[in-house]
Structure formats: C-alpha cells, structure tokens
Image 1: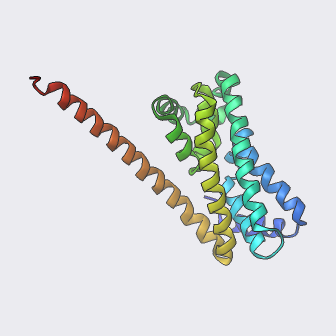
Image 2: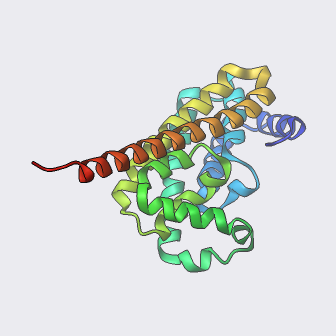
Image 3: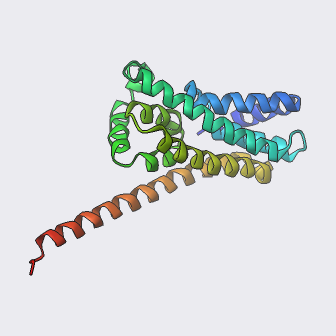
Length: 214
C-alpha cells in the first residue's frame, strides 16, 4: 500500500500540471506498469485514483481519462506479453523477480491450466498486474485469448478506479487502502470459486467412471 503522505504529495504535484501533461503522465505510468515494470515502484491504481480526483476538480475530463487509462492498460500489457514471449528466460533472472520465484512458478503453472482467468484476475492485484502479461507470454499463451481477457480486465479496472477517484475525492487515502484489500478479496473469492468448480468437475467425472454400465 502507498502511504497517505505519498498520495497527498502525488496529488499536489499532478494537480499543479496542465491537463495535457496529466493525461500524458497517467498514460505513461499505466502503460509502463507491465511493459516496463513501473508497477513495482508505483502501483497503477494509485496513479489512476489520483487522476480521478484531479478530474473531479475540473482540471481534466473524466471521460477522456477513462478511455486513456483503459487503452494504456491494454497496450502496456500487450507489450509486457511480447517481452515475456520473446525474452522470458532472461526476464526471470531479474533480481526483483527472483525474490518472487515461487509465486511466479505457481502463476506460470496456473496460466497453462486457466490462462484467461489468471490474466483477468491479475489486473486487480499490484504484483500480478506488473508481471502477469509477461507470464502469459512466457507460457506461450495464444495472443488472442490473452488480448480478450486483458481487454476485459483493463476495461473494468480502468473505469472503476478512475470513477473511484472521481467520486471519492477527499477520501482518497481510504479508498486506496480499502480498494487494495477489496481487490485481494475479489481475487481470493474468484480463485476459490474456480478451484471449487474444478474439484466438482473432477468428482463428477470420477463418479461417472465408477458408475456401473448397463
């Protein structure tokens, strides 16, 4: 989580910029989160929330912001996918990724089983948002499947966090805190649901195979 003092500093600095520069900064940071691994330094949702607050104060247009955030998220993740697909082995040797090697190996294994679901869910947690596109590329997931899940996740995430900042305003630090926990809870619920459905299908297949045939 980003501290309230850092959020206040970012808000103050962005608020002092002219509208076009605010758009450019948001696009660069959201794009770079997965494409350039900027997400390890500044989570994308913080930038989008702050930009939403700036839009609520009339400095930029919320509709334009939503469109730019969604496009930057989708394009940035596509670049991250391409980097993972072509430079996957070298990518995994980066020191900051080596610290999370077990998580990455688990994510790669999961990507082979349920790629699109992992791509969509990854958009809602800071660490996975930065690495999931690259993992999809490393696992050689078909780009069309990746793009569909990535676009859906980018759309939901981009619009939701832009509007949270826009309508939250003065409660930005609380929104950033609780939205982070809400994202984790959402991912946990969805993962449990997927695993439960998978287990139920295995049980049904086992019962059918064991049932006597007439």
